[in-house]
Image (cartoon, rainbow over all chains, first blue to last red; front, top):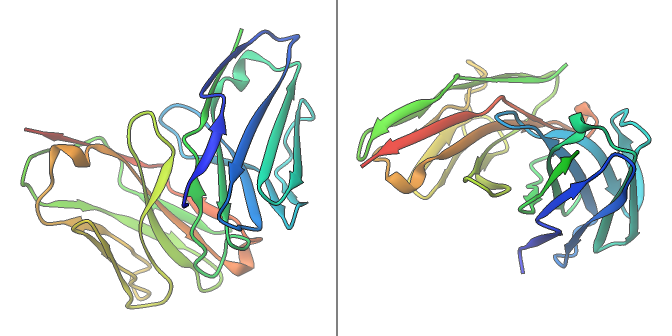
Amino acid sequence: DTEVTQTPKHLVMGMTNKKSLKCEQHMGHRAMYWYKQKAKKPPELMFVYSYEKLSINESVPSRFSPECPNSSLLNLHLHALQPEDSALYLCASSKRLAGAGETQYFGPGTRLLVL
Amino acid sequence: GDSVTQMEGPVTLSEEAFLTINCTYTATGYPSLFWYVQYPGEGLQLLLKATKADDKGSNKGFEATYRKETTSFHLEKGSVQVSDSAVYFCALSDNTGGFKTIFGAGTRLFVKA
C-alpha cells in the first residue's frame, strides 16, 4: 500500500466555522507533512511531524492547528479562517525526514474554500 | 538559502515531440534532486530522482541527469503523449537545509493530439 489518503476531498466553510482535515498512511512512514498549494504555485510547507512530534512549523498562523495522534494519522484543525486561506491542502509522508534522497508520497489533497 | 529555478511555462507541444524542461539549483550542501508531476485535480507524485552527481533518474520514458558542474537537473522525454499533460515540479532536499524539500515554481505542459 503506497497510498496517502485525505478526507474530505472538498470543504466549504465560513470564517466562524471549525473543521478538520484528515490524512492517513499505512506505509510505516515516520515523517508526515502538511502543505498549502495555491493555484498555479508550488506547494508551500506548513508543518512537519517526525515520530509523532512537531519538527517544523513554518510560522503558520495559529488558526491552523496540526495534530498527529499516531504514526499513521495526521490532522489539521481549522478555526476562524480567512478567505485567503482558500487553497489545496496536501498531506505527504516519507520514511524519514526529507533529506538524503527521501521520497515524499503525496495525498490527493483537500480543496478548501473559505467564504 | 537553497533554491530551485525552472523554466516558465506553459510549454505546448504536439504529440511525439521532444520535451526538455530546464531546472537549475543552488544549494549549500549535497542535495538530492527530484522531479514530481501533478496531474489535474491530483496531488504530486514522484516521477524520478537522483541522489548524487552524475546519477541519471528515469521513469516512464522521462530522464534527468544530476549535473553538479552546471548545477542542473533538466527533464527530458523523447516522445511526449497527450497523457503527459501536467505540471512538472523540480525539487531538491538537503540535509543541511532543515530537512525541507524546496520546490521550483512548476512548469505546465500541454500536449496536443
